Amino acid sequence: TIKLLLLIGLAAVFMLSSCSRVANAVVDGAVGGLSRAASERAANAVYKRMAPKEKLPPPATPGWNQFMAVQAQVVFGYAFAPGGLWISRQEYQPGEFTKFKMSDNGEESEVIIEKAFLKKLENGNEWWRASWQDGEEVWIYEALLSPTESSLLRLRAKDADGNEGEVPVTQQNIYMEPTELTEESIEGAKVGEETISTPAGSFETDHIRYVSGGGTLDWWLTPQVPGGVAKYQMIDENDETAWMVTLVDKGNDATTILESY
Image 1: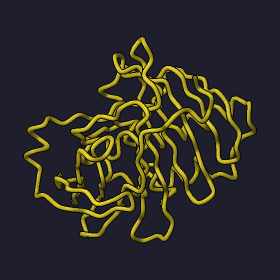
Image 2 (image 1 turned 90 degrees about the vertical axis):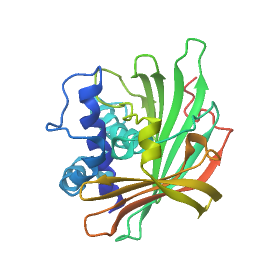
Image 3 (image 1 turned 45 degrees about the vertical axis):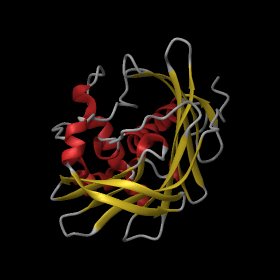
């Protein structure tokens, strides 16, 4: 299901730890970003044990803090680094947001993933929001990030039951910067130019393709969208769509909804 697929983001976050200032990675045997999605099936069972909503700990407890930190790893993994990467030629500006629909060809359920650049502070630190919605369940995170240190400084959260609070930030692997590719690598992986239609509009895009885990990881890039991405998908070794993520909304009026600043 889509819920289980969300653990790929968690795996990607953990596996990126080898290039991070944060030590003590939880997942061993990290491999290149493009092959991380191949761990999807093995990760599904772990996520099913880890994060079903019915096991949500009581609010304002250490268990709630830990649970929300684990969920944040999943949400940030997909919002900032699906498959360990975020391929883009277009930066987000303060106030800009995107929302993507993630669907699994074998399932009717779908997840809405939001990424929003909320505010840039005078000292250069940045407030961002990442959230995902699966039916009536909505998980919201607002994080203060340090671009210079590639680290997360503060984290506020709201769970699917509406409980809200500050999550203690230590040296956990909650957020890792995505792997950056060179412009030459992106241009070399271009397979064509395409006009694609999404619920957020039609866009002229560059179609980028990389080999991944026996299949392919495809991206459709456009400067007309904050962050520069209109669509991305994983095709597995059987030439079937493992998952597809499509832009459904974008804008430039994002602000805090958790009173983070």
